[in-house]
Length: 531
Ligand SMILES: Cc1cc2nc3c(=O)[nH]c(=O)nc-3n(C[C@H](O)[C@H](O)[C@H](O)COP(=O)(O)OP(=O)(O)OC[C@H]3O[C@@H](n4cnc5c(N)ncnc54)[C@H](O)[C@@H]3O)c2cc1C
Image (cartoon, rainbow, N blue to C red):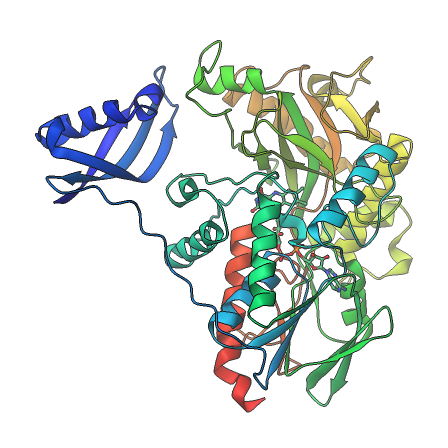
């Protein structure tokens, strides 16, 4: 017999099979010797009280032999000789999962990626970190696997489409991720493991007949009547296709500009912008686990904070326990930070984005103050993107160049005091002490300054000069939405053109981008025979 059992265990008990079996025995009234094993179904940490508990649901095998978890099977069809072809622009999670889903449906795709493959991309990241030189086509956002590859690999999503989420997680496991992501409440892969998983996806695609071409930047669309019949690339090549998926992410500003120039409708979309905050991990562990040291059985602690300040949302974003702050800019002269962590999350720092909601009117007001509105009017759909770029440029200049980031200790930041010195920080290009109130737009600065104080009340010890505030976290989500029909999922002006993923405004994170890619692929299957 197999029985679902809910358990409340101490962290060291979960790490010891005999203790778990003993707990199952107590919970079910069965003898320990009759329990042959268990599979964990769900697992989450309850750190609300003085004692830290792990809540878990297990599938216990009682009076029958234990069986290992069966992993979902995926069948990828051979597509080399199929007649129809889908062009996928961008090999991030949205593009990759669209291509994999198309394979399962027996449809061929050609993936055009402006960046380099995983290995070559890693060299460009090293140059960016050590020498402060960014390659505009190969960086933390662009290249094989998209912005998801050298990320934290947190696979948590607010989406409630459980079936779809499980499918995405199972696909990650199929391509090499640990099974733990299937049951952990906050699944996480880690930067060190993601590259092999993404490589395995590419190898499967190529083995089944899909094409994958790196260093192919799409620069124009060929439009005939109401269809995109092909795409031009920066090196003069042209690729024909029956349908086109645009999955270029939130940092492909040249694509937004191209669509705007070609009068293909796009819309400004509110997003969030702020800073990345870094504390010593040990401090966050002490605050969250109410102890001096978390010991060997608990993971480095995370946090999630949200506060309304004068009617505006201030919230933590993409928190990375045991992580590193990364230079995530895609162009010279712009400073963008983000965070990643390895699978063990074993760096001594805890970083998190701390961002403020930005509305269309805020962008226009800020650009007006900087005499920048003449470039594009306040009604332009590029308005928020240009605001984002303006702040990134101001931060780059304030940092002193070479991707040094302007920074301030947290209490100094909120009190408007220049920091005399700065603590150690994981951000490799280096940080410079700057009065951030003079760099960030006033509404962002004021919201964060008050927000940090409020967070310090919710989480005593958080508001501390041991923490450093690094600017700017600006690529939280796309500042633009590319409209699409809610049923056909195509752009309203183009019947075979599918805006997809985070850049088009339909996802925020790896899992939701992957789910959107799959959704588009399934929709294409319904219509491709007619194209
Ligand atoms: C450092 C970092 C850490 C992150 N951590 C997490 C995390 O832990 N969890 C999480 O859920 N999310 C995280 N994110 C966000 C996540 O990576 C994105 O939400 C996700 O990758 C979006 O997927 P996408 O496929 O829509 O776009 P992207 O991943 O941005 O992919 C777009 C792809 O299109 C390519 N492209 C762009 N323009 C062109 C063109 N003209 N021609 C051809 N190709 C083009 C790009 O090179 C890129 O590869 C992180 C992001 C960064 C940068």
